[in-house]
Image (cartoon, rainbow, N blue to C red; front, top):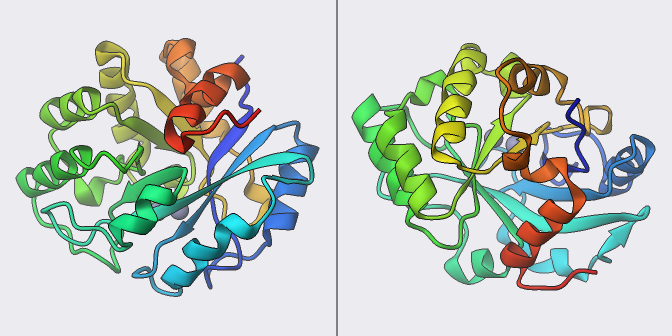
Length: 241
Ligand SMILES: [Zn+2]
Ligand SMILES: [Zn+2]
């Protein structure tokens, strides 16, 4: 059975459509036995997202809250199909865990070819670490070329459990994407995309799918403390512990 030591995609009241604090989220992470929490607030162009000042100030918080290691990240909005995102390069370079995602309020869906080109542009941005909820069928893309670009550029693919309910059709897409990740040996993370503390670590349906398809456990980065710490050493540039 796969168990996770980190939730790699979480939101707090800093965004107006999320309902818990970092204190509540970390307390819940500790309660369920996790060790690490990636704090990945929506970047400014999301409706109700915090301003860039939030991301500049996030480093003033302690590394450990409620004995959980807090990784200071963001969920960037992809703003066009040429690779533009909504935080300055200077700020993005400082962040320790950078997800980029397509969101309806920030970019209108186009067509498969264009979505694919958009992902390849994002892959080429060395400051972005994680490909966010790419199973969303509204932004369907050609898995072959995009995932090859993710592999070539050292990206991590997120399997987002929240998408299974919030973005209909994601489950089927995520299975196909995970199959291709296994084939190409692309590392993945499994996340909750929690918008309140009770969802922290709530990734059951995503883990079920991965277990059913016998996804290689060694490719699930947040399935092992040392494996994930090694990844964080690369993304944060710090020893951490
Ligand atoms: Zn998102
Ligand atoms: Zn999110």
